[in-house]
Length: 585
Image (cartoon, rainbow, N blue to C red; front, side, top):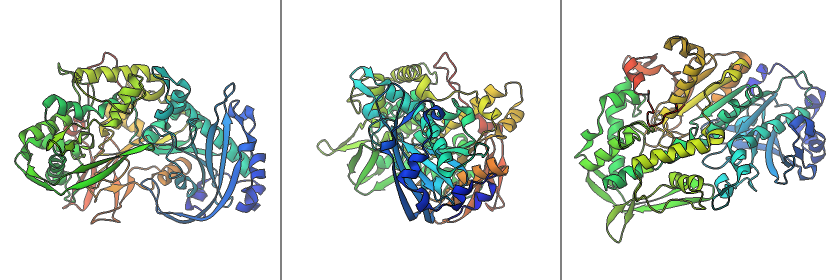
């Protein structure tokens, strides 16, 4: 398999890589002979005895949200371990090297999700299919399947700082340092031949490339960043916000009631973008024109259901609900409205934001008590573990109660996490001048109906970068300047790093890395971003996404899309986090 993008790679490999087959290079002896020396990888020591190499032929993939299907590709699977100077902890890497004929002088780092520093090997085909050697790290946590939270505490009250900084940024830096040097030797690149370095990931895997770009600007040529879990101090506590709303109100909405509110929101706001397709492409217009209180009295009905939610690599949660029939209550609509407004302190100061209207209320899920025949609070471990383990420093996976927890408590938790982890997990440094000066390019995407990381989180960081880097320009001038190298695209109807089951006709930009490579290596400017409808009635339809701050608006009965700007819509994305004395980027 030779990528069509190969013509963009300016340099060619030397005779070894040109003449060699996969069988020639995919041997333990060749891998060992290709190991970079310690001086070339910041003093890291690779254990030569740990090297394994195995050739894989005719592999295939059905694709992912961030890369398309591939019928057949070959690669060399190499694993190794290394240590840092003065430390005994082994760090494990797995790297997939394309067959020599397919290598296009590219390296791709990939990340994880939740507290996992990698997504297994699921992201690696997305590099190999574009002629890139692609790698993952275990962060030094003991195995590729061990998440950071499992080894975060040495004991109650004692942080494992080696784990913290490995997870925060260091392990991914070392993955790229070793991976790039190893790739150069593996394929026999000369010192003058260019090796392009890219990063692609979503969620935690979207925070990780920001952690690299903000610290190691000249190490990267570009990054595809999806729905990044930046601003950890606020983001993780924010998962608990719906639970605190429910607990404060003393009302625990049946799951079907919240589903009905979402469905009614989608139906009411669908046409605001000029096209009726079951997709809310303009959640900003939805904010301006739709009030969830209009849902009061609407009937709902859901069958009995058992669902299993995968929380992270170490576990999942099963929830069984009975058949539900009723009407949307005033309390249910009020709870939804309070959640959509986002966290404010008791005196009305804004501490954070929540998801856009049309996003599902996943964090607000309640549980049914069959003994009392009532709906009850179900504290989400996504936020509960953060407070218990990372703020209270207890070896616990969740909070047992929300008694005495107020909106002020949540703001205090957010500020504590911000202060404690600003240098490792917050990842919102807004001055990216070194990366821009080095010629780096960013394509940043975020689902407009994301129910896990607020879409406004990405918008706020993008705008923070614009304001910090171009303070003396007008809004239009600074937006244009930023968009020359750092572009944000909101994905209509998309959920968290995926399409949404409630808006199946929404598109997804599945070939974004291809677009980034063409931009970096071929100067093909992505005015709009290609996206494809992957399911639903419109499956296969090709669409395009508008680059922020422009927003989609369909004309001619939904047949032609324009990218437009209007101030009222823009202002719905602008937040003043006045609960804090310092600026929150």
